[in-house]
Image (tube, rainbow, N blue to C red; front, top):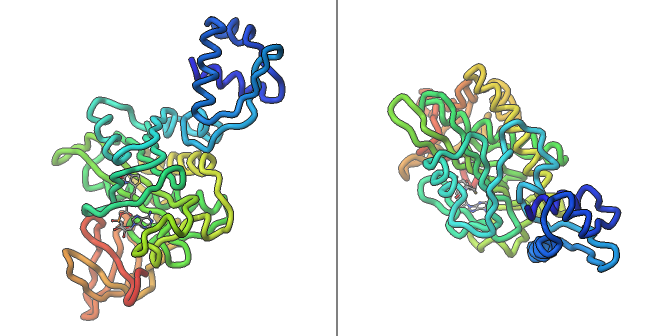
Length: 328
Ligand code: BT5
């Protein structure tokens, strides 16, 4: 009901709405309306209240609730339900827990802060409160588990395309990093639950350094991490970016769902690759091997050539890529 009050206030943001009118429209008492308004104010909404005229919404807080992101959504499934948290251990963990309990395909978990944000292989992900974007999308595709890594490429492509809408040129550092000027601005963590030939669910977790300042990063991250704000010198509208990302993701995911192919996503990842054509180090179980990155195949595998001329198609998962002397 609180959000229905908010919805009415948003619809008539230029004029006051009387408590009487709201209570008639929603069929609840004026005292209840007053309580909802109070609660909205506690959430950060600035609402002008006048005993004579009623209520008027002045401004909304910078939070990533469904009510705030929905105006930017053009999707049928992705983000049509958003579960929003102020603070959480990891949105991926929460999304897994919810999936186990039957949460639907397309539901998105967003948290303003993660206290146990995860990267791949047990690494951690830094997500300070209200600064970044930490979200996880629940997917329930009817696919073979071998296909799951493709979803990371879809998410990477969606991210590149979304940033382009904000005039930001970013690149994909295969398989799961989005970088700007050689520094990481976004990481993707795709996790799956399934059996030998069946997927129960897939969680695609995306962490974006939206409005982090330099002092939000620890000393050791500073030389390889950056944020959209640091790179563009302006704060980004997080709600709009989340909406854009879910729109692009749904569009690119449709190709996968319908044709089991990700041609469009591969094209985007290839055209915006930070590694193709470069000499790199392939890092696997703490072993490093020098190679040249040649191509991305139709399944999202990175084709590399080693010094002895042999070729390998790398599947994401246990592998990381490094530049010869630096992060990339
Ligand atoms: C990733 O792993 O890049 C995947 C990150 C996924 C984060 C999202 S947030 C929403 C969802 N919920 C979660 O719990 N996770 C997902 P990886 O390639 O392993 O990179 C991890 C490494 O990136 C760390 O070891 C650090 O070196 C570095 N790192 C940590 N936080 C960072 C940040 N905010 N920006 C840039 N680099 C960071």
